[in-house]
Image (tube, rainbow, N blue to C red):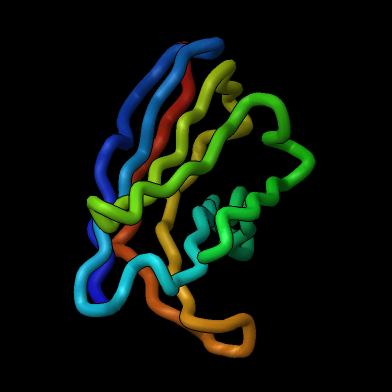
Length: 116
């Protein structure tokens, strides 16, 4: 399975960004998809997840600001990030898994920087 992220960049506090992740090499509609983020010296943390069923979940820190969605026809998962804060600055990684017990696969990461 291959994952390719896009959409990161520099944005001012309060701004928005939309991350995208295109998946190839497996039946996308069967995959659970997630977005994680990592800052230097810290572990990678789960930001949002959308299951193959369509059910979504979010980290408390992003609830009400971020929205994860999937487009099965385009094998793509998006993360819409609104009201961005400096604390959202991180490398964001796309992740997929076939079932919860699997370690899954990762994208290469995309940098998001929130700064004035």
